[in-house]
Length: 572
Image (cartoon, rainbow, N blue to C red; front, side, top):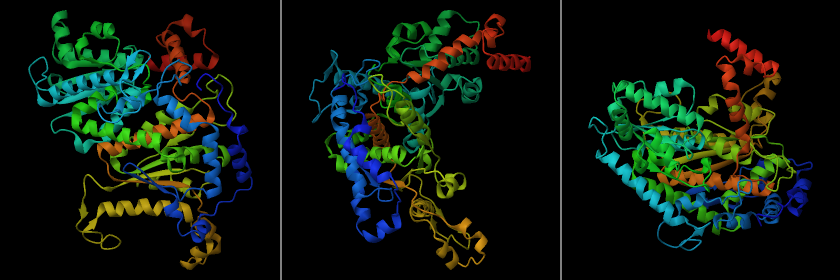
């Protein structure tokens, strides 16, 4: 399958049916709920611990049937099976795509059966050998057995990475803050802007700080620059600037480890190759948080919580693999995204977690979704036949309500939104005094918080008519329209029991497979990222000009040349 041309979705029966429905489509969520008392039940699905309500989406049975036909026409289920079986579906890099193997349990019923050999590699054996090595290291740090060069235990772990080596770990660390061991903190450095590493290290004690340098090739410009700055900081703070090379290397060996497979470069930096944890070509950066890339988080939360995290991923992987398309949650959500973007004109998608611990989730999804599906050619190199990709964005509720919800509610653009909430907060609190008005003394604040979650999806779906505005006492007809809400704004509600490690893993896997579904339908390779390369290449070419090399400056276009000249003038 992977060697043949992808199916052109616009030629399929499912696409043609959807195009016909979209022509003159006029959604009526109020009417649909009124005429179908069972709508909420019919469009609510379970995936692991996630209850997913699609009933406030712009979907009818006719639309859903056509979307499911489109999934069958384009071979979503077959391509997923090809992926988890180790076929090289990342065709531009001729690689397998096996992030699902990172969370396959070591024992129990597995698909495919063990040993799982891909390209001569026993995948399961290698994955679990690396996990065991990371677990052993993490326990050394957590127990205090691993000590810095002066004999003090580690209190702060600083992860240095960028892209998938940063966005995933920092998001998961923030999500799992309640599970972090007391006395250990993780910080994350990614930006090459020197203020990032300065601010993250300014108040740290070098004797109790451990750096994790995360770069598969140990050659990423931003990561290695920051790693050198961190090493320089360590030497300066330990007063080793003028020490012997042996003393410097000894300090680095106790305060730096690596997530990399380039052991020669790791050793040249001063890190003991025994303290390097690898991963594989079949793991893309944005799919790697559950690999050794998550070492900083494993140190913080421990082996048992990380195993629970991996089990959450695997739960959704198995749901995706075994559940019929008609009730397969990632497939259904991906199909709805295709419906909104390709047929109803949506260009962006909001993700709105009503749990503060997921405050970095939207940023994480930006890389997962847009780096994966921001493509203009199909996996055989031919131009796409549809619009692809969506702009993902969002903030936690209720912060977003006081910022951009106005646009979603009353703006002219269609913006589908995913609302995510948990029933049991990690930090339950009561407002014992209340405000004497809307909030009674003893109010459970999480209940008040979740009232907003439920209210927003209701308001988006059903809006407020002009007559309802009048019935509330508004008599000035000139402002009736400003207080009217059209409704029919689509949303998906995702509710989990609590933000456990397993649930965080389930949420990540859910969106991974949504991305997979959309990419398969569009016929694109969701697992390469050539679009990020050009800017990196040009930055290296331009760097001498920014350092003042006039010969390089003169070769630039007029705009770039003028901007660099102005920068040099201001820098002086």
